[in-house]
Image (cartoon, rainbow, N blue to C red; front, side, top):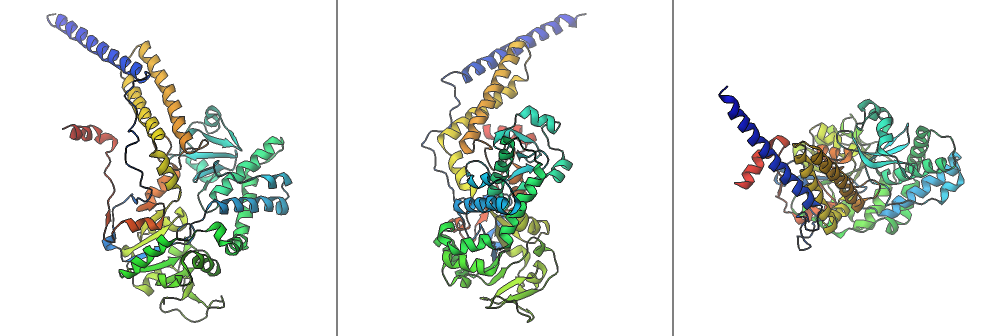
Length: 495
């Protein structure tokens, strides 16, 4: 009995302490809504964004790299939006002329501001979807044709916000290859056209037809002929990349080109970009390689003669200034004698260039992602950073508010969540009004960037960006705290 009064006093003190903390929380909520809220990001005087930076997923020491390999398309050859626009037009024309689609589709134009790289197309529903690394879709980033689909409808279709793995594997297609942007835009426009006409259609058939015409344009050489005929329309000379290759050669590094594209196409592009003596930039040149199968198959190299025919002579060594085709990673290593851990390979395609070297533990890999430049500039801008700082402040308040009870607290948290959603939308609109960032959803990586982080040791927007670093530099991944390490991390910062 003696302890009851004491316990009562402790309980009353604890209730007073909680009430005080709750009152302070409510004051912070009101402050967040006021004009003097301390949540504005750094001023315009902060450092300029470095769009030439090399970013690191896994520590990479160039001291140990003696061999540098390069893909061609979107790696050594940088295409502009004219190519995507023309691919879109050629594909739309093929749908009409070859597949019997409505002639009105020919009047549509590629919209570079509509789609982003790394979207998924649902071949059952026709949705264009942006997924995060866990398979969850981001609100307000699901489109049916050109129309957004309400989140509650999408959640009902997929029975939640996380995409079932079996469903994703069997019915969704990731759009991340060289056709991804015109393909995603054309899929959406075809779906929208049939919806406008109230015509019956199945998204699977539309996907199959669009994919078929794109692959046919690639296989029959229509796209290659278009670029070869007007290289200045689609390509830009790159003196910086040529200088980088020359620097590697002067330092005694070995270089090679490994591409799936045919030699006449590569030769025309390289002559325009790097001049007629471009072959002197490489120790080995391999064309029509057939990646990703090239990395794990058993196949011999064949030499390509000046006539374009493949020689019948046995290839016992890989000679500079000669052109080779077919082959394999095993044969490449045997003939060159270059150890796999001394090779750094640059490419832009996740599944053609990056996955197999990493899966086999064969080479270090570097992803070339041109979309980085635009996003870096935007995310370092004052408007984006101001909204980001506000979002972080609101998210901290929401997390803190969950520890208190009472109707007033719940109402305040509900209002904070509304403001958080509005601020998230502002961040999305800064980059792309339909899908937001190519690299992140809210607080997670997109599925596209998750694969980049998994399969690329380093990544950057252009090969020439490495000119800013010495040849013996080490790219260190930055230490970030894990969720369960946060208290220790903050304590270290405050000490």
